[in-house]
Length: 317
Image (tube, rainbow, N blue to C red):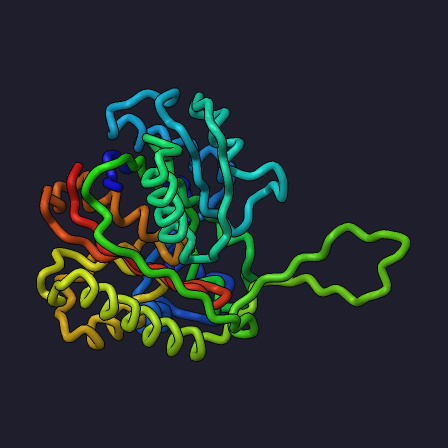
């Protein structure tokens, strides 16, 4: 499986650290020191489905195909305005595709999981061109009075079109049931028969536990994949890591004994965009001309669950 098109879309609203200082007990210095973030993009009047469709259209155009050439759509998404239908179904109608669709929720690892699913479908001969979209609005999941979480997140959508051919060299997905360090609950509609207590509230995150688990698990995934592919860390052009915060990215770089030139990032001006982060970064690098055919890229992410996903691709657009 190889990637033949990429796209991305951001909300118009830019929220700077200085703007957060106006209603939070925080400062630009405090946020930068702990996260590396200066600003983030936040949905206001837009709908996530429209951002997702915009990213998808750009990926399809970049691939040089028509929407009707898409055989399957996979959308990674944690939360949006709809519980049902799936966001992939809405994207299909907006871009003019005529194919089966499915959503996947593997939290911030979802884009890597979706790529792995697409690879399986292409290898089986069930699809030729697959649209993979990662669209997220985590700013709707946090308490905007809690400086430990709300400063971290931004919204956005990234997309790729994949087809058959040499590209994906190897992948690795893991899940370890560890649900108490990062979660978001919401109540369902009541019935006359419900007697259990249900809770609903903003995202809960144990930052220290997430940091430790993310660094160790992502580093381990990457090392295993490099060994499987017969590569040394320096053979890879770029490591596209989940853009959770700069401290995690720097810690993984330290684990791999590589300098930060191998680790492009957009977390400083996009924030943590959940499963969209790697897709957004990939499109940015591609459109800036920083990736050439033959370059080897590692993509790695982690998320609630606790899930991890990583893959190595050889760019062959």
